[in-house]
Image (tube, rainbow, N blue to C red; front, side, top):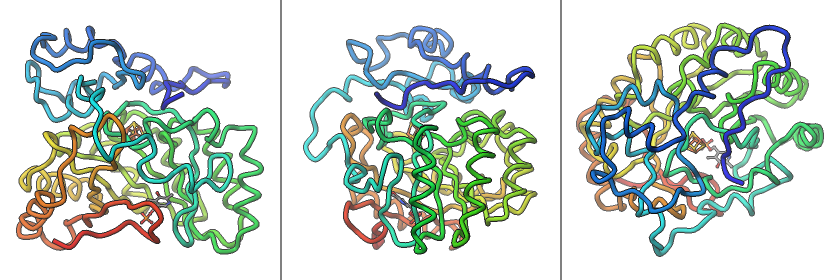
Length: 340
Ligand SMILES: *Cc1c(COP(=O)(O)O)cnc(C)c1O
Ligand code: SF4
């Protein structure tokens, strides 16, 4: 199983929220997407057969793409490519050692003080460079049946002071499920911080409902939301509108990006991204070198060129707008910074 399209089940008596409907209406058929973008298959380097990690993107995200442009940086992030099937040395199914870092079903421990919960395998969008595209979510996510034992693990380890909800995308869970997590986590005495890693506010801003904002604002823990924007055009007016109430609650808003060939591998684009993020109340946190996951080799920017881009970025921006350039090396005590 991959980051499958598990659309949250709605058991409430009221109408399901609008974002559920928008998820169901996402593009999953390549021909539909190409027709919408006014592109011909011959303009693109498409795989001969549909890939296992299939096409998926919300219509609102597609609306930010330039029609008729086969090289659009937003399209490139989601468009399956024939190059995904070419073998590439050094690229594998588990590039960052997630499987060896498992501390139980749905729980990853790599760094002191922090525990990462794979809250769900579902995502609103399938990014071709996703380092968890081959992750066995079926066996290893914190599904309802296992979350009590996971909470027990967190409770019994006094060194864990920060819980990171990740996935998949944790904001794919319904507000009720999230409220359940928050309630339980708030009873763990040693926890100081709750961090959520999500791309949903960017690719489906309708997910940021007043109910979600309220839920985050009400947590007794310090809450951080780490977004994942890669390109300044992802910060649309709708996205800025969704982030505004979050910023207003005093939640810390950060962003991490992946340095991606043909998407954001230039100092101009990265500087514009930092500026746009800051206008939306978000501080740049990490700029990751690509994790070498099978199928993503065509996105790689090698260390040398990455350093050159980064040096130029440093020369363009105030220090607080420069994300840290890092790579994840399995077995290290932290993400590994790259010297410019
Ligand atoms: C990246 C990561 C973290 C968070 O690292 P920070 O440097 O604190 O952002 C925590 N746990 C796991 C398993 C990770 O991969
Ligand atoms: S990069 Fe994030 S949003 Fe994209 S598919 Fe992977 S987990 Fe989902």
